[in-house]
Image 1 (cartoon, rainbow, N blue to C red):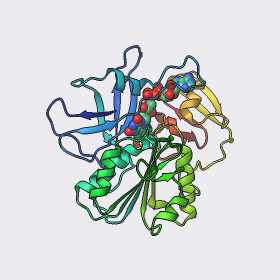
Image 2 (cartoon, rainbow, N blue to C red):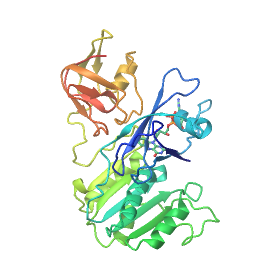
Image 3 (cartoon, protein in one colour):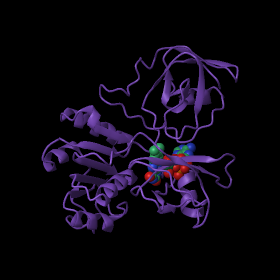
Image 4 (cartoon, rainbow, N blue to C red):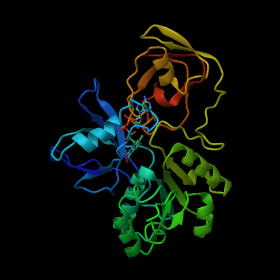
Length: 336
Ligand SMILES: Cc1cc2nc3c(=O)[nH]c(=O)nc-3n(C[C@H](O)[C@H](O)[C@H](O)COP(=O)(O)OP(=O)(O)OC[C@H]3O[C@@H](n4cnc5c(N)ncnc54)[C@H](O)[C@@H]3O)c2cc1C
C-alpha cells in the first residue's frame, strides 16, 4: 500500500535524493513507546508529496502467538487520509546521483523495489538518456507491485529495460506476459543480459541476497565503489574484503562499562552488537530500526573505540555511536 504525504503546515518539503528513506515515529495504540520505523521514498523527488510504499508483514507461519508487524499493520489498518504523522527529514547514504551520466543497474527484491522506483522515476522524469536496467525479483504475481506502471515505463522509455524474475511462478503466471525470467536474480543473469559489467549497481533486498550478489559482482570484476546496497532489516552485509567487516576477531574479550546503569559486562563476541549486549545485561537503550538507520540507539562514548559492522545510514555525531550496528574495539565506557 502506498501513502502520499504532504506537509500539514504548508511549508516546502525537504529535498531528498532517490534511494533515501523517511524515519517515522508512530504512536501505535497499545504500544508504550513510539514505534520507530524507516520507509524508503518510492517516488522521485517532487514538490507536492512524499510517497512511501509499505508491505504488510504477517506473523511468521511457524511462530504461534506472535503478533504481525507492528508498524506495517498500523499503516495498513489504522492510518487514514488526513492523519498527521511524525516524520524525520529524509536521510540515508544509499542514493543515486541524479546528475550522473553512466548507465545504472537497479536490482529490487520483494519490497526492496521501493528505492529503485524512486531512482527509475527520477531518471525518466529528467528525460535523461542514461541507460537503465531494472531487475525486479519477486516470488510471483502476488508480490509483483506496480506491474502496469513498470510495463508502460519500459514501453515508452527507450533507454529503460525492465526484467521481472519470478522465483515461484503460479501456474496462471505466463512467461513473457507477467514475468520475463523464472528463477532468482543473479549475476549469471546479468552476464547473460547485460552488454558489459560497466554500470553502477544499486540493490535492495534481503541480506543474504545482497551478500551473494555483492560477492558475485566483485567476482565478475565490478569495483567495490560501483556496488551500492540497502537492506531493510537488521541483517549485516559484509563486503568481501570491504570496509564493512569488523576489524577484529569477534571472539576477542573486552570490558564494556555502561556507566549510567552501573553495569560492567564482558564482550565475548556472543552478542551481535552493543545494543544486544546492553539488552542482555538489562541496560535500557531506546532502539528503532536496529539497522543503523533511524539513529534512536545513539549513545555517547565516554572512553574507548568502537567499530561498525555495517556503514550506518545516519551519521552519528562525533563521540557517539549507533549501538545497534557497532562492536567494541577494546575496553569501552558508554553513557548508558
Ligand atoms: C532504510 C530502510 C528502508 C525501508 N523501506 C521500506 C519500504 O520501503 N517498504 C517496506 O515495506 N519496508 C521498508 N523497510 C522495513 C520497515 O522499516 C519495517 O522493518 C517493516 O515494515 C517491518 O516493521 P513492522 O513494525 O511491521 O514489523 P515488526 O513489528 O518489526 O516485526 C517484524 C516481523 O517479526 C515478527 N515478529 C515479531 N515478534 C516476533 C517474535 N518474538 N518472534 C518471531 N517473529 C516475531 C512479526 O510478526 C513480523 O513478521 C525499510 C527498512 C529500512 C531500515
